[in-house]
Length: 303
Ligand SMILES: [Zn+2]
Image 1 (cartoon, rainbow, N blue to C red):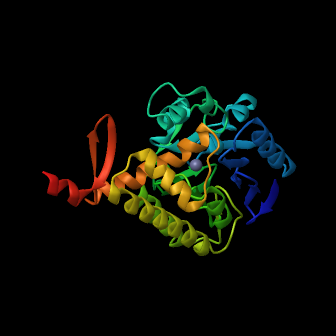
Image 2: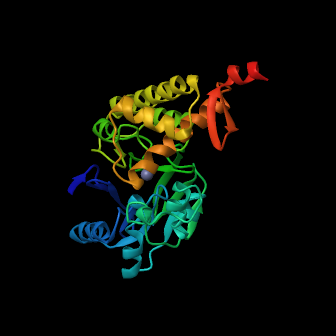
Image 3: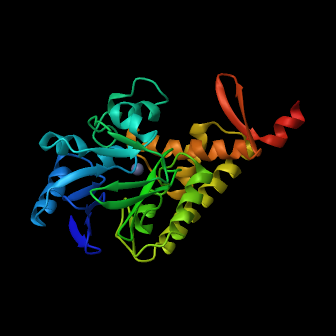
């Protein structure tokens, strides 16, 4: 964990998951709280070292690694919590995360871990994407950045954009192969939107703060576009979701080693398929106990 002072009032705790501390009148506002108790303690220590208490939490989205520290911080003091509308529901009922990853069913026990399910947290203020929050006299401009999750928001404060998981460091993209997302058109639009927001520093959820995020954004968009191409290519000879996941693994040299890693790859593949169906290129057809994805023209011809 490296502590990076980006401006007089904005400090980032840069680690596997970034967390921000933004100074306001009464103390510091945490932007995301990391994955667990340990992360929360690091936030508290960093604030204490700078001589002020934590006074509020703003969460960008409802993934366990971004709000997992809330519960610990709230044990120490009942801080107000701000989160985007829609994301807040999952933060209050975090079992929804492993549930949606397992198609709404009771999750496999292998999906019940701190990476996929955080302790529940109250949310005091649900904000609509794009609204301006004023906390302790400090303006936090929220920015709608959906696609990685349905209602994810970035936060712009003192000229620093906390971009959440709208883009990743290019190394992180390489590590994941196909980074998690839920909506293909939106992930591209949001990543590109980040580049258009004027800021002195850009802080992704995972990766170093930078002055120019464009190379990272290009790397992310390129990877998603390549993966979408692999999906379209594979369904030319009809395929199930699982067939397409296997094809993506083989094309990008990925080898998910457990059910958690597998479902985190299956979701973006499902999102590519939804986009292909919405674009009129592919159709879902249920036949012989399987859901097949076939080229849209083929299905028209066979009618
Ligand atoms: Zn995330």
